[in-house]
Amino acid sequence: MTAHDLRSQLASLTTEAFRPELADIDRLPTLDLARLMNAEDAGVPAAVAGQLPRISAAIDAVAARMTRGGRLIYAGAGTAGRLGVLDASECPPTFNTDPAQVVGLIAGGPEAMVTSVEGAEDSDELARADLDALKLTAEDSVVGVSASGRTPYAVGAVEHARAQGALTIGLACNEHSALAAAAEHGIEIVVGPELITGSTRLKAGTAQKLVLNMLSTITMIRLGKTYGNLMVDVRASNAKLRARSRRIVALATGAGDPEIERALTESGGEVKTAILVLLADVDGPAAARLLEDSGGHLRAALARATG
Image 1 (cartoon, rainbow, N blue to C red):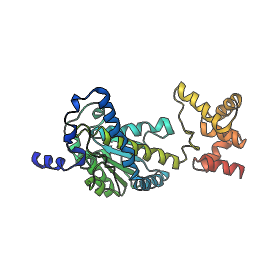
Image 2: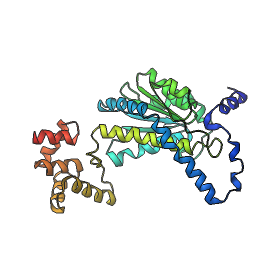
Image 3: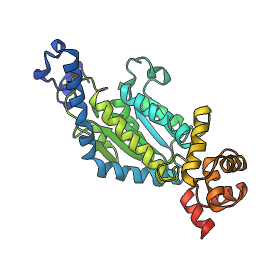
Image 4: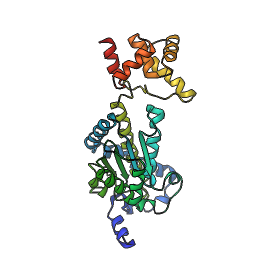
């Protein structure tokens, strides 16, 4: 694609549109600028709401594959790639997932998290190589993320994944995007032109973050990683999380500190198992077996125990 072709393509994108009415914002007082920016951001949740049926269908499809052992893989460049890596990296401490279960791929590799890697986003070949390195299977789900919906790395990742039989989701912020068209599940959150022309780390980035939050969080709820709204699979890897673990057991069971300590000791520190020990009045090994037989779902394990 020539520079002229690319310039013409970008000019047609809503996310790249110039807003003449904002041409003098650099002259505004700081408080007025903050109010303007806040008002811009306020419209993002409504744009996401318009795509909730598509988002929920994608989540159900991802959860079905992850139940069978599949992975959730994000692929994007620049801000979109960083948001995917961020969401993936927060799953292990929040839901006790294996680090290989939710993966964030960014064009240019880890270096691109903190600096620009020139040309990486323009390479669909790089996307294919990154997915091949993961040994993609048909049980995996690949989410291409791109504000413009045209980024070759994201589109290439989705096209390659779909050819391998994997589930594909295309998350973009423009209508009629190549990314959404390439995916089995196309999600287009149209938030309109940015406050700073073309700076898609703003409203578009916020929209992407909201959708990625939904994809991972609701999928994990479907996989039994929560009990109600409690993070019962939290990994107690530091003092704060150890304290949170005790609080979660307390909220779920109403037990006192001595009982909570006993249950956590019996359960090897596993919150979900400790809750089952207390609520079902079983010992640690029995609780662990009940959870295993219930696919890790605490409510199902409780039903088995109290059946």
